[in-house]
Length: 356
Length: 223
Image 1 (spheres, one colour):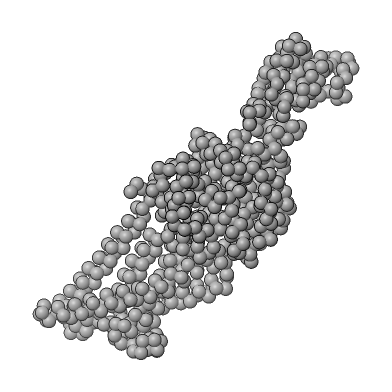
Image 2 (cartoon, each protein chain N blue to C red):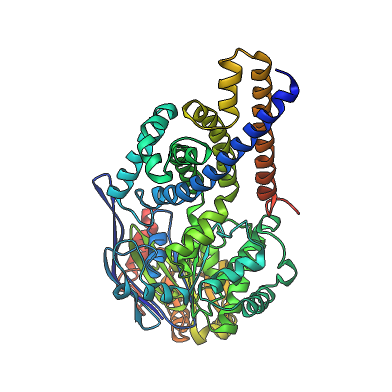
């Protein structure tokens, strides 16, 4: 639905060049919620503004719904009519809501319809329908100044949906809101995504946002996408920074001679009670040191850190069992070299004990 | 001078002053508003960034602002004659008054429009709004309280200018004060004219402030 390739943005600032985007390739599939996460200055903001050409990329292309927007670009800073029409089909919500405080809530939602040249009565009907959709039907006549932050963002969302967009861009939409309001706004985005089949590209600096609503995520650092993929794929990628940040697990071995394993649940395996099966099959006691699990779309995904009695060599078989079940099992502190499934030479643990 | 002698002079003076100020204000707003908006749009980082236009307009505005009005008034006599056919009388005075006030008002408009949150402009751009749409639906309505305040200030400046215009053949309270108060040493008449000018300025300021308050209250607190 949204594809950027080789997207580069270089700002000229007093003769110095600042590279905000450095060859970003992003692919957002239709109907998914895609989160781009990164610290401030990572280039997220430039990225989302390049998607609807509010910022003109220095090089690279942006394709939204099959239309190459970079090819529509007018001269200089001015947007040609075709680009403006394309923009009207891409909704955008902002961190600071950007509502006109001189207009009522209803008139704010009508603004994009005025731009589209929709007639007065139709505008009102559509605006009220959208306000109803975001749960603010009773605030139509209020002014933005009379609303709370969460309500303002709901108006922002209603306004963004006025042009019946297929794509919604969210620029830190929840960053100015408290945690509870953030959750309700994210829930609304999720509902809209499912009910209207809306594709959502959001940027954020909060890992929680990605965890709550995103199907896919990308991590940005210094203008580059460092990692990207669906949450499941990220989890399945050993050493993925995003997976670790999304599902942080802690805990250390309760004593020497124990094996600590990080188990990653994703895909079909996550639906089965693997840990209790493991315990019963091999008659071993398993301690859970830490876990970060979430149910996304009826499936459990996440990571768990478990402790098995005995050293790694004694646990090769149970670990093999976990891997057979389609789970990913990483030994914390690394697997002894050459120990994949084959019992290690007896001398190795001995030297370890001697060293102590 | 008795009151019955003064009264028709004062009435005619007030009518002429208000006539000159009203029309020159209309011309000033019509000329200064687009100029002020143009200054913001063509500025660095503006929607119509254009250094040449910005500099040229900026220089013209600055020249207009730095000339003392009394000099401008005299310098413009040929131009006024060309436009109106004469340079004497209230109608003729509208020309130099507007020419003098346009640069002043344009700068006030520039300041007011520049203060509009850029996020709002961005929001309308993201909806597919064109530059005229942005001006009409965002910049002007959002800057409206400041613009009304700028008009008030300009009207008051124009009242001051119109009094000066009295010295160069204009009519109005200023001209009456010069003729009767100054040249005939009628201190009483002078004081009454001054009081009348103060009254007019105060009333205009009050109306302007009231309008700004009304506009600013809209939406910001509960109505």
